[in-house]
Image 1 (tube, rainbow, N blue to C red):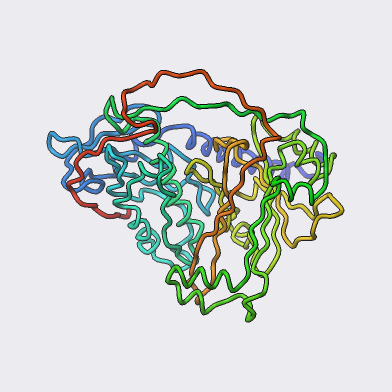
Image 2 (image 1 turned 180 degrees about the vertical axis):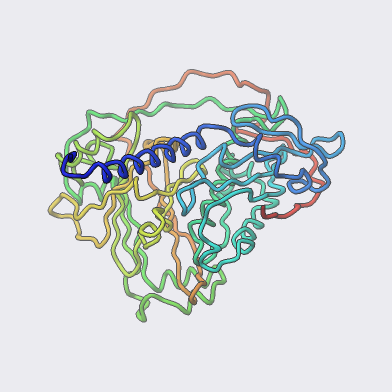
Length: 433
């Protein structure tokens, strides 16, 4: 007896594999859905997150946050990065890190609790990967949350670029999220100023044009760098080893021409993708979800090759409101060419759908950060970032005045503000689990 051309034994094997896949998918969904701090906190000593701390309070809220005490005094709070934000690494599974942060938004310590990254298998000590996060200890992320400073950058460990980026990004994003929620400060610590206006994408503005029109009115933004300009940036950053490894011998050669545009905006999408492809894209997007087209040419590829091995584009990051997200291969579709006849032919063009869980507003300003990597040896790289800013031209959206909102809490500052509590107690460092 055969079923669709296969023997019962073959069919049975296929059903077993399918069942195993479904179980693993369910486990993964449960891992994302359930808050895990109460479980993981049992593997952490309070003194590992705050020097001199001796006990945890009961975790509260969603996502849960646990107070950490030094005797009778509140030292700060402990939380799990993966409870607050995405922390999917090279392996496709979450990296779990316990973080200690005080009421002022200063990071005091970490403990890496669980990961499935293949770093040890390729000969990179786990301690080396974890140690790069030491630069985050002592950072005042309240200044990042209010927009006074950019998110801090950590050094890259060659061979573990994706792992390091995911670890640092998830710690910073989760801390900023909690700071902005007001859960780390005292009851009178946080106030939010009324939003002056509400922007809404005008879907009626959907007439296609051409490449030059979009480039001229700012619908397409570009970043153009020569090899020499990149070498100078490495020199300015005191990376002399990076200066000595140019992509070509001629400083005037094109390093990269990078172009970005939000193609979920009707007129931009219909122009760059063409009407049929734009319609197919819109049919796949959830309400309010956006998609960005990124194109590049020159000696350096914005795509790199890490996404082929690990599914993450480690050379580009979408930034908005001091939060960032890196695209995975499932967010990406390769585009062979732009639709307009006057558009340039580029080596790399990718369509990236912004993950639905990243709170992205296409009408507000955002950036694409390009990480430039120069290989120094078998496992060493020098890395510096370049940011390409984007602001959607005002003709694509409408604005209305927002109703005045009474601040939920008292404050003298017009923006989110946190109290400057005592910062005695030095950073306790990072411990590996």
